[in-house]
Image (cartoon, rainbow, N blue to C red):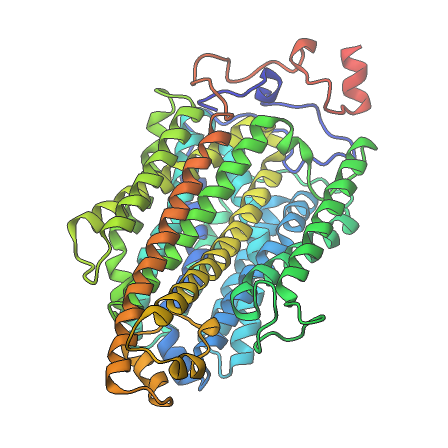
Length: 583
């Protein structure tokens, strides 16, 4: 990596050939020359756009889908969640399937299935068909995501690898902008279904281009650790449902919306606790398999040192903060300002574009400063941006400082996401690129789900407590009205929505006016405190950021010869042939 690694052994680019029980997910291959073709990167970026566009297009097309399929918006949200959970649950398994049967072959099958799923979405006649198609697309993305990392690791090195990773990270916001412009336009003109028809065509293009990629040798003797795969999938699904249900089901005590309760306790924290226990069992199982040099669903050498753990912590924190902010800001725009979904999407274009540009160009900083410096500065920029937005939000969105805050947030977020991915991939053996890609996808989805869930629960909690206190202290709000409205079930409501709620109570005109004023102040205060909380979390992330690699490119050799015994990490098990060679 351009920042080096905390220990030289992690810099080995060519590791000994794995035996049949090895967990290597990329067969050893010669490092691509600096004149390598950009074709693999084109395939990687277009495929990431294909995968990301699908989710964004569903969100933008929600109004048309609900009308055509005669279904509530929550059904579309359920379909999106199904795809996300399926991807997160099976991504570790997806990396091993690619290694077992050949990365390119599995990638091609997955791209074809994803295109077919997009055709299913485009032709959906019922919410059930939409749900199945979207869940299927999420499951095959679990095969696609690790493959994209493998293609980068096996085709690029040095500067080109860093830039390729930047483009991969930038493809996600690029897909968001495309979905906004194209899907939004299609939804308003020829119909929302054409957006997914376009993804079918893009899938066909990616499939054809993939035949020009060089094959990554399969590992036919690689045994798949099904026990580890099941432990990972169950734990991830439990955690995802648990965190997603915090707001609706209750942080601790069950709400009426909870599907069940145990002695009045919400299922959300129970699922989270069971999921965490399952996650601990997963790592114990994988560690045991690694000590025994048996096949395992995830190779812990990806997290071999404190440096790699710090990189993961930075990645998780940034994705948590970014997705939480990405939830809170549109919430404010739609509830406080009453903007439509398409107007909201256009309003955050500066934020999306700044993420794209930062992800693309941060690679040029790798020769100037080490990862720990870039990461620390990035988190300071993110914290400053969130603080600026928190202190300048009013009832009008088009303020200069709001736009500046969004741009700064995007620059910091895009830089950090690309940086940590590049640092983690460069620190690991190239054979583990599939594991790195799977780990990145897993952290991305879990952190994003947790970020939205926690931000929602926190913001609603602040809102409810503020409303309760303000209503009790306001002279025009009677105790009778307070007793008629269950403030504990408060949520972000527009002024017109609040008027509708109060219309069913004994509220007088003066009380309604006072309640609307209280609600407006409470919404702003809740948003401000939530954004400042995220800013504080970003500042705390400086601690793991300082534990990232501290060397810039050139201070250590890019590759160490595996023939030199001093360059082999003794903590990593070698196969018998390699041990005999060293002896």
